[in-house]
Image (cartoon, helix red, strand yellow):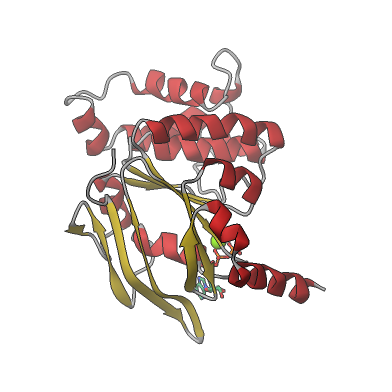
Length: 253
Ligand SMILES: Nc1ncnc2c1ncn2[C@@H]1O[C@H](COP(=O)(O)OP(=O)(O)OP(=O)(O)O)[C@@H](O)[C@H]1O
Ligand SMILES: [Mg+2]
């Protein structure tokens, strides 16, 4: 299953004024790999996602997808290459029915190419995808205006939107925050299924128990720097990681 890296991130760097948000962060992601990314608040996790997906331009460093340099390209170009993401702060078309939020990725040339030049019946494909996410197909939920749905539904809708692109790399930025235990429990197996089919997943998550159950490796950021990378057991045993998290507790007191 593993061959050459699908995604290579090399020495990415981004400064905002006096804040070094990301400093020389690098890692690789192979087809079918599941990478967890953790770190205290403000450690640069979302900035790293923004740098990879083109929402923020790096000061230095490179992002390669299948060996092709995609550094600093526009978000829609990078999405078209097959890197999809979800947002920590969900961004949706709140005035549209939930299923209509999937129409843009389902209209993409990427989707058309993968479907053999045919878009098919997009509304049906959208409803199908939402059904997989636990939006009951026979209920009114998929047809309700997105803005009227509870937060957990919006997070799952955002995931469906990303998956509609049929990505090769999926980046999840705190997908589980705002989801109920049962929503997390039903979403995890879905992610594992896509992952087993070859989808490479990079998952930022504060809910460590759930994260450590599914990932192969974990990368830890602190103050924009990658402090370690290893198996969940290795990372949990790391003194540096304990110190990074302890620092947060002290700050909160
Ligand atoms: N657009 C921006 N302008 C200025 N500073 C920013 C910007 N984006 C992020 N930062 C700063 O960069 C640092 C890293 O922020 P980032 O959002 O990447 O952290 P994070 O690890 O995702 O945190 P959280 O766990 O709270 O989501 C923080 O100090 C943040 O205030
Ligand atoms: Mg963040």
